[in-house]
Length: 323
Image 1 (cartoon, one colour):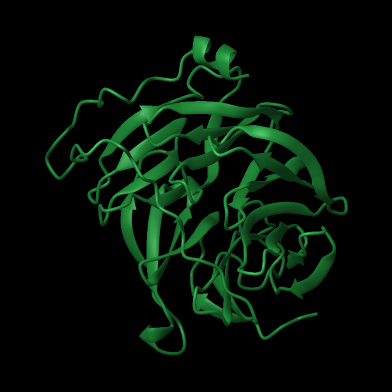
Image 2 (spheres, rainbow, N blue to C red):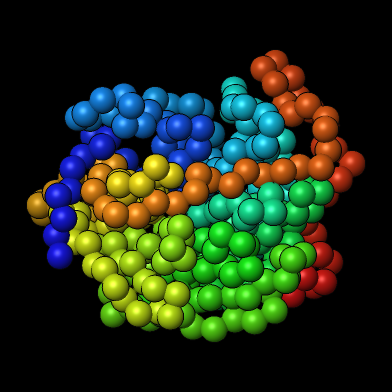
């Protein structure tokens, strides 16, 4: 069905992604431009909600999550690795696991679980099959590869208790469901859903009823799946490439980032690149925060902080241990 789709943020984001609700606002990225943006919530009034750039990197910015207790600071999947970002955009790199990859590879979508760990995927720029991985950044700053052999890794999303991880293998059109132990180890993986050819699961979120919401790249739609994997709702959209979904904690509204990347310049692709809004009867918790154990201050304006003791470079030996 086609719901009453509106435009929340007018704009031509090349690859808008990573929509998250935190501190009463929507934050999202324009990946290839390296931009982190915010727009205020419904209390800003009806109509368009102008976006404000929070920071800009000189590498692709796949996704961010807030850092607990440190307003304006973020953990980010960016470039070839994982970094802590200060409000001025300066970066403290925890690890760059995709440095030296067999083909040029970048980080992509990412999100925190309810235990304060940050999970993020990667993909090759040319989408080389099997070149993508899923990484987990623990609260001590260590980075671990938890899944490999994937191609385009998207949409990490968790159930409220953190025991179940959903991850999209976008190139194959498949959503995986993974059982986790409390330490964040994957103890079981199954295929949850498979989309029609040409339709790719992208950004995802889990609502307060345990249903999974999925932006369907190439499908001009958002899907909602029940925990038993039945498809219960399809929301048609006026754009072909929705990229991520965000439900407001107060309920009543779904926000959707979109992209114009790869679209023909001569076609009619609707408001591609805008952030869309759709009234829905659902809600989700705000974005979970990264919870670092170390209390040392992060990089600030005019400062460059040395890597903390707990932050280590992800090496070839680490890859062998984590595989």
